[in-house]
Image 1 (cartoon, rainbow, N blue to C red):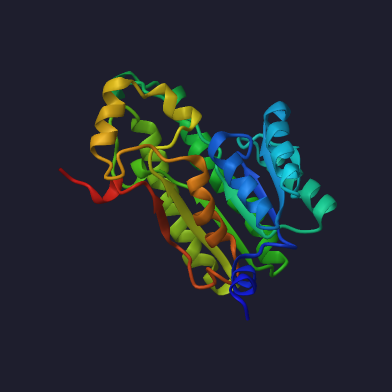
Image 2: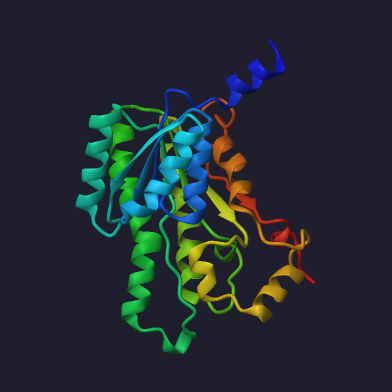
Length: 262
């Protein structure tokens, strides 16, 4: 087998359907393009069709396939409706990425219960809902699948200025490990993709010049990540052959941030 044939055999996602919730955002949108370039049909889930159009044009420019399905991650019925739409249009789902998220720099003593509940609902409970809705389908259909939940470096070690976000992401990491244990014998792999500091929309709320300098001093690579640098990890965790024995893993993509102390 030639090198190209070997790599295609290991990482080709042709014939797979990937649902990317949060696919209209910067990071998950780029990950969705990578999945499409690897052969998957990609379904972008989000609230704003205009944001999806740019990604769909990019996907099509690379010869990939994809479409947009509106979804409200705070609504179980909306997630059910999304699943039904995808099953009607694509016939099945093989990969689920949960990447919707929100953030806030509110100091701890000023966080209202309403803000706390809103962030927890979007970052944690929405993933719980999506894993239940799509997981029930995977289990009932005895369908091998890969679920990738977007965690955060702040889910491993809390960061200042983002208290609720850090707490919600830590819970996502734990939820992922629990589901990996629960569904391993059903060939449903559940992993956490853990970005370090990337130019995501929610990061802009908490980044000022001094914080950027602090981050760079703590990052051996001395820079922020580019969204495209998440694609390799995404394809690896999505591939049923390349990651057939990988579940419950926290795959960190952070330029060395997590390995640095002082």
